Amino acid sequence: MRRIYVETTIPSFYFEVRTEPTMVSRRLWTRKWFDIANQVDELVTSAAVIEEVERGDFPGRVAAIELVEGLSVPKLVMPLELIGSGNDDERSSN
Image (cartoon, rainbow, N blue to C red; front, top):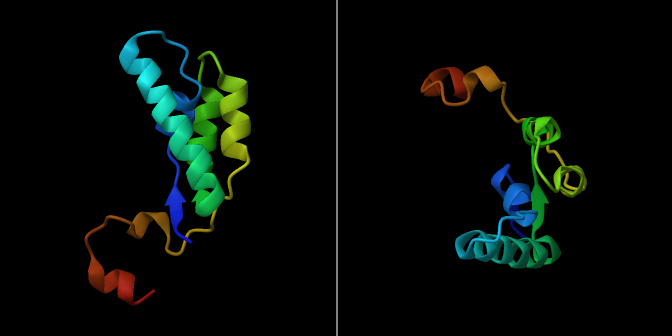
């Protein structure tokens, strides 16, 4: 089982309401991917994604919040200030 991180575009496209063909395709692809992945993989998200969706102002917002709140939020393995710092020595000492 893979652990897959779900960021904000997934709930956004899952509940997309625009009718242009490209938007309809993105909604259908996203729903198909999510529905399958949610059965065979572990989908996770972060508090930042949940907060961003909650702050949004778009059709389907309530359903999008329910979608991401249904995912687990794993604990961080290292402090945020070290992620992407480029200092491998500091990371290995923690």
